[in-house]
Every structure is written in C-alpha cells, then in structure tokens.
Length: 98
View 1 (cartoon, rainbow, N blue to C red):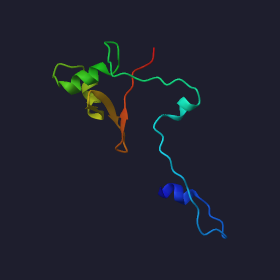
View 2 (cartoon, rainbow, N blue to C red; view 1 turned 90 degrees about the horizontal axis):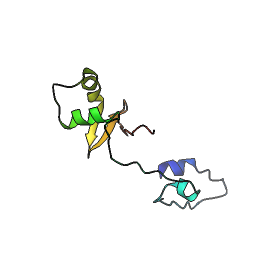
View 3 (cartoon, helix red, strand yellow; view 1 turned 30 degrees about the horizontal axis):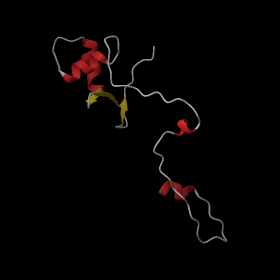
View 4 (cartoon, rainbow, N blue to C red; view 1 turned 45 degrees about the horizontal axis):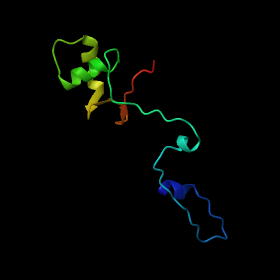
C-alpha cells in the first residue's frame, strides 16, 4: 500500500484521491488466453534435482563429492527443493524441460 501511495501524483487543487486495490486470485496470463503449465512435484531418475533431494532427505557419507559440495546451498521443504540465494530468499528449483 505504501508503494502504491508513493507512486500516485496528487495535483495541487486535489485534497483527496481514492485508489481501488484488488487482489488477484489467478495469474494474469490466464485472462490473456495463454496456457498455464503447472509443475508437478515428481522427480524422476534423470532429473538433476534427484541426487540433492536424496542426500538432503537422507545424508549418507557414500555420495558424490559434487553433491556434498552443493548441498549446503539447498534446502528441502515439504519435499520441494529450494536454493538459498545470497539475499536470504528461497528459490524453488524446477526440472529441466525436455
């Protein structure tokens, strides 16, 4: 709300201005007639996320060094793999589209 208020320019002769704020419950691309692809939670054998998910769910000393090195940069929440960004934001990891 503060961002919206700071971006509105009120002319000198106006003392009030009403701004209507709505919350969207579906992505705007649906209203434009575009298709929405929903990613599933399925992780198959060839998926790049599989070794990381397996290691994070059950840490084992018998794992590839590359996976051990990469693992601290990722977190597993509700069986979803997220990468930790430098700004503290969790980025959801998606599969490669083939």
